[in-house]
Amino acid sequence: MVLVRTLAPDDMAQQCAALLHDISHTVLSHVTDFAFGYIIHEVEKEEYVKTTAIPKILGQFGYDWKYITSEEPGAWTLLEQPAPLLCADRLDYGLRDMVAFNVFPPQTVRAIVKQFVAYDGRIMCTDVPLARDLARGYLQCDMLAWANPHHSGLYKFAGDAIRLALVHGVIRKDELWLGTDAEFWNKILNCGIKEIDEKTQYVNEFTSFKMVSSVKEGEIVLELTLKIRTIDPEILVRHQDKVSVQRLTELDKEFAKERQDYINSKSKPIYLAVS
Image (cartoon, rainbow, N blue to C red; front, side, top):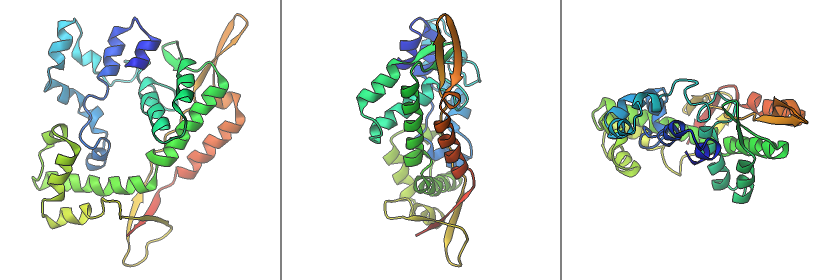
């Protein structure tokens, strides 16, 4: 919301949309996507918002809550864009994680943010070196965490446990939006149902995952397709009185190859032996 407000100070509706964008996130965030097989906070956003005071509050200020909380493509162009373009949602978690994972110090992130502009309804860069830093930092975060095979393995076991807990009545679906992560997970962890315990026993710091090419007898092997996240920032290029928009990969062939090589390396399913 702060990023949208900085780039579009007069667009109050889009600021509201940005503030409420992740309002329907469940406990354990994207872990629950592994339980349902879809991005639950997007698909069930409208149903969740109906249960809150948000429609009434927005209505008091003349806003249609369904319009403000819409996830339809093109509804809020600063907030959401198809990958690999920049948008406030992608930049929000990306820039925060770059600091959290020590990819960049805060001052570098501030410099990256300072050169953003809103043009043609989209967020763009104006400095090629900073755009390159941003794109490489984002790729580094994907490598470290977002497409980390170890994390994905843990997500798979946790997601299976959540799905089974719903089937067995250990938890109710509305509890996905109630209480804390710890309260929710402990309820599953302590249920005493063998089928669920067989999944939760692996969701801890002692489980290790090893990439393998084949399945050996007696091994537990997960087959996973990692979600790859990269960006290719649009850059506003000014030549005297002319303005053009170009992708970073058009201006920097070295980065273009680096990004494509990374995508190629992660595009096939992986097999993880579990111990």
